[in-house]
Image 1 (cartoon, rainbow, N blue to C red):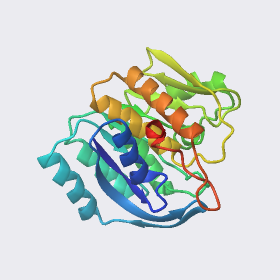
Image 2 (image 1 turned 45 degrees about the vertical axis):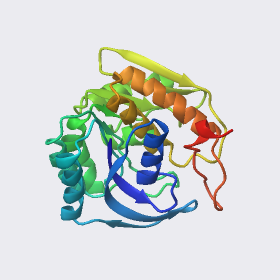
Image 3 (image 1 turned 180 degrees about the horizontal axis):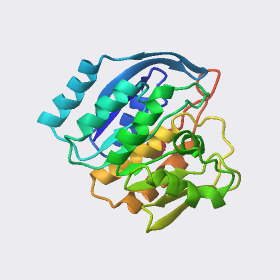
Amino acid sequence: MLTIAGSDSGGGAGIQADLKTMLAFGVHGMSAIVAVTAQNSLGVHGVWDLPADAVRGQIRAVVDDIGVDAVKTGMLSSAALVDLVAAELDRIDAPVVVDPVGVSKHGDPLLAPDAVDVVRHRLLPRATIVTPNVDEVRLLTGFTIEDVADLPRAAEAVLALGPRWVLVKGGHLAGDAVDLLTDGAVRVELRGPRYDRRHTHGTGCTLASAIASRLACGDPPARAAQAAKDYVSGALAAGFPLGAGIGPVDHGYRHRG
């Protein structure tokens, strides 16, 4: 499986979370780093995009020699990077999970304003599954989710942008943690307990990578999403303090005695 995303120097999200998640699912992880961040538990202190040739070179080196069974995209901070990655996905015949990262857990913007339209029109039509949270739904569609009852209409608004499936994450809403997976014809509610935890860094990256890992193994979307939901719920429950701010979820919780 190939992740195309930014590096998190603190190790809780981004490429680092993706690779840990793939390992947890028994999948060989490969990466194309599009940006380097200076990041810790307190926030994102700097973002440096890699040159287009470096990003393209990483993707093609992996795809042309090893091949991929699934792709996950994460933070793509600029319009140029989004456009480049979308073009490279045209060369790949494998499921693609798009995590449309807009802001960090600390509220730091991670997507340039001029990149949003490129995500809408170039990246989302290439997605097998897109995994927006409530803030990312609003960023992409203008639709505001107030409660769980709004999830179906939110999903319809995202599906209109071209992905095959959408998983609208309701973790920011009150009550149980309810996500909605749909392709417009089939609807699957994924419910889980809400954990009142401070240490939640990396949940979005982890969920998208877990879905892609199961797609790489041949799972259909609904089964992949449920397996990912179960894994992230456990990782979130086991989240731990790290540094002075928001700690990460525990990617290795299944392997602890």
